[in-house]
Amino acid sequence: MDIRELKKLENKRKMNKGYMWALFCAILWGIWYIPGTIIWAVPPFDAMWVDIDATHGGSMATIVVALLISAFNALTVIVALLIWNGYLGKLGEMKRTLKEFHPCSKWFFLASIFGGPIAILGSFIAIGFIGAGFAAVAALTYPVIGSILARQWYGEQISKRAWMGILVIIVGGLTIFVGGAIAEISAGNLSYIGYIGGLMAALGWGIEGAIAGKGLDIAEPDVGITIRFLGENLLYWVILIPIAALAGYPILEYALQAFTPLAMLVLGFAGITFGFCYVCWYKSFPLIGVGRGQGIGNLYGLCAVIFMYLFMAQVPAWTVLIGGALCVLGSFVMISEETGEMESLRGE
Amino acid sequence: MAGLRPIKFRLLELFSDEKEHWNYEIVVKMQKEYNMNSNFGRDSINFDILELASGGMLKSVESKIDEDGVYKKGFLLHKYVITDFGKTRASDACLMYV
Image 1 (tube, each protein chain N blue to C red):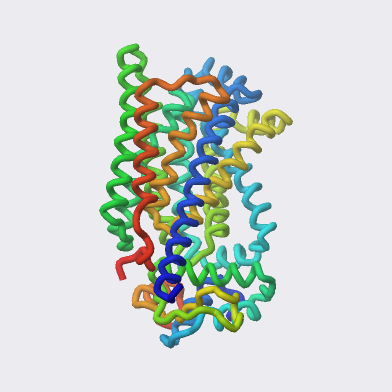
Image 2 (image 1 turned 90 degrees about the vertical axis):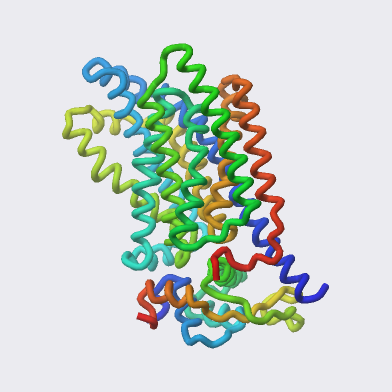
């Protein structure tokens, strides 16, 4: 084999590795919706909802419980990520990266705003108001936002084939989404706040990916993602939870009651699946780019529907099956792209 | 001290002399500086170089097969040079182009 062919093979291997990380991300992300659904019925979160519902109404109760669940989700994710970085021997690199706030770690803190209190909280709001199936598919359009921002902001190359794949995935996502919404409208119980939550998830994750891509230029992905969750924890536990407590919600009382074996087991499961889904997501970006990483990561919508069917007996509608099939097709369109000649993801 | 900066910052700094460098030379230098002497450390640093190239900050100008086992026998070795985009990002990271 000559040098040229070896080089081509090396590039192909690199891209395949990136696609593999993105696929792992999709599977773990899909699994995350199981603990993300169960936790609402686990003490003290169930009692917390009933308590706040009695004084402030059901909608407010769902939002405040979603806030506390999101905060605990961030807490268990950071524990999982710190253990992961300790195992990889990257705690020293984390300290070095954290110190470089202006050139580097600020991007991860900024990403945490969009990924945390906007996307993840929005997703929990969508789960709380409508359901996990909806929450999963509602965010499916986020790669469009991520791809366009990455292209405009730092000139990331997106081939026509990659665009085609992204578009097929989006059509699949919308098929699932619109099918569910029409059924809800005809049943007369459309939950607007849940749909806003879904929109928050799509926008938040799309913007987060593009911002994180900027930081990942000059940081290691394992370290970058941990700093991003450090930022999210600070946002919840230092700003948002105290604000909710000052506003008169019994959020701190219930936060202290959440340290039970059952709640910690479910939250730990959420932390491990979500933490490593994010590790895989961030690891895929430097190898295949934000657009492709998000496009393949989008298979989480289909994975979530499958896992919710297998473990929670939630039977998907026919629109979900068609949309899911389109998502798989779109991902294969992207993966089948000829990448042997592609050495860089940027315009240069 | 150079070792106190994140690994990718230091890599960009090493390439900021605008000269061409083989990946194995840079990897050996970095392993010493960061005390990452295991095979995992070696591969981890090389992967960081690969990510910088993938991100358009470094450009491969020459390749050869590692026949003598200077990095890994049979693997492809690359000679990289910093790109204009790499200089811009190095400048963002408060390196020499400021």
